[in-house]
Every structure is written in C-alpha cells, then in structure tokens.
Length: 146
Image (cartoon, rainbow, N blue to C red; front, side):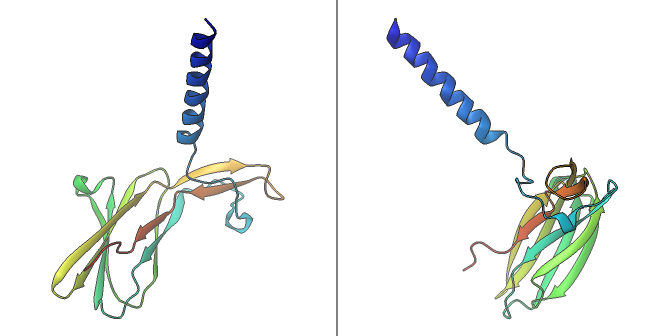
C-alpha cells in the first residue's frame, strides 16, 4: 500500500514540475522600466537581429502578417550587409512572421522567425504602474551556412 502511495506522490510532483516549466510566458520576470508606458499601447516596435557580415551584399527583409503560409505580405525592405538590427512598428496582439533572405556565393538562405507582441500591466516593479510590451524580438541571423 505504501509503495502505491509513494508512486502517486512522485507522479503528482512530476506533473506539478512539468506544469511549472511549460506554463511560463515569454516576457520574463524583470521589466526594464524605461520601456514602460503610462497608457496601454496599440502599436509595438519589433526588433530583428540580422547577420552582420561584409560578404553578404544585400539582405531582403519581408514582414508577413500571421504565418508565412498565409501569404499576407505587410512590407519588404532591402538593406546592405552593414545592418545588425532592424526595427518595424506593428499592431499589438497580432502574429507577424519575419524573413531575411541572404545570397551567399549564389546560394539563397532564408532565416524565418515570428513574434506576437502583447501588452502586460505591472504595478510592482517600477515606481509607477505601467504597461510593457513583450514578445517583440526576432532573430534572423543565420545558424548554419556553408
């Protein structure tokens, strides 16, 4: 009887740990107070990290509303290789997919990432209660390129 009881306790503890691990949101625990707003924002600026390399002549950045397969192109930009970060203003609570196309030695590489900027209200961490935007960064750097 005690063995069954111990097994049940272990299962409950394991389930509790899994729930804690997978229930965390992306905004983190610490708020950078200068990024807070007194009123709830309706727009957010998404920051995209780009590959910075002198061997990539141009980078084509495309912004899609929703998933990439939805094919709703919002905007398109072409930049030189000097750019490390790219910022674009979008509407809150909508999913956006970003693509960066790099041409390296006549081979085309596409980096894809998405974000859904959301607003959260906090009254504890800063001097005044404020709204802050989270999930507003995408990484469009190349992971593997030969």
